[in-house]
Length: 504
Image (cartoon, rainbow, N blue to C red):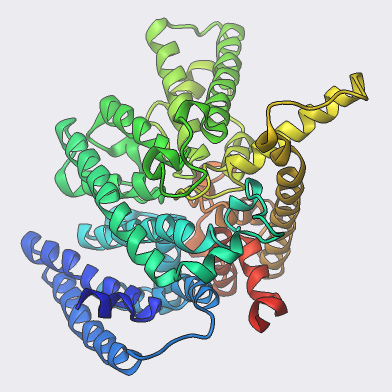
């Protein structure tokens, strides 16, 4: 029975998972007196559950000519078409928004971006916030599984930086001829699901212990594990968990810095120690450098203003910088409750370009974080370091082993290509948004927020908070597709447009 289910088309399985997921907000709505929302989500479960069964019966014997191509196109459809189904109960429950806004909200959640059209999120019921967080949580798990089961064999999603040719001139693409992607999806899902669910439960319980309400703690736990930054309270400033809640969340940010924290040994190249992982070391280095820079900036600003008030204010400024830097580096977008306290302490506002740069850098490959990814930044850093060495010693020979040389050469080459594609994507989205009437400065922040899947940038990085509800509908559609592009990455989209990929 299980083998028959896993043999169904990937998109059908995603539809079934989305339909079953509607039961959670339905039960929560019924338990908390939000009967309208609970009833709508239950009807959605029944309607889309029946639709999924009918489609499953119609496609039970469907066998695509290329399973790898089929799963890659399904990923594209999952982030564009599936949110239509997920948006229906949300749209009906809210009642006062257009279906485009509801679809935008679901695309934003499922791509773990976390941008929202609601300027006052507390006006929504907790059942609707739970659904937003749950959709983002499912999208984060899909990214975990798809990165290892689909993108890794195709040398996409950052794996191309460390890939090495197989004997005989082949590549990792040949793995798809040996291991069926459907089998890989089932195997990796079974291995990763207990880890993903267990980490979410641990963080949920920890946040409740620190004083947070159960439903808000669950929403924040899902938002941290998926790096969606979705909150029912408008951020951590209004959360009841306080400093210890932020401390606990900071620990869980590590799962967005390196895939070795949860998937060590699942891919052949992932057997090294976490402390030796270049992504983890690069991420920790950025945390120390950027946090130190921000703290010293506020410290000297406080001295100039003669407003140094004591060790407590300095510690709060340091902690607010550390937590917020880690949050935006992992593209979560949570702002520490002490973040603005640092500005009050020194009288200096923190430049939004720092947060934009952190979001552009992003977290580790095969994690829920977006951005350029730390491994690509590491490859460019090592290549630059080697070039500087050659300026001093032109005939020197680079050491550190074969893998290091491959990262400095081929890895840096493909990383630079991706970086240029990412930069061109930002320019393209900015131009498209400007043509719809969005101001140039706002279009830049929105483009980076969408492509790096860091929705809270729109509220924090700009000089004044950007209201997504106030931009034209065409601009919302452009942002939604930019989120999909940022989630799948440009190389995956280009692979779909490659004629050889369809011909073979």
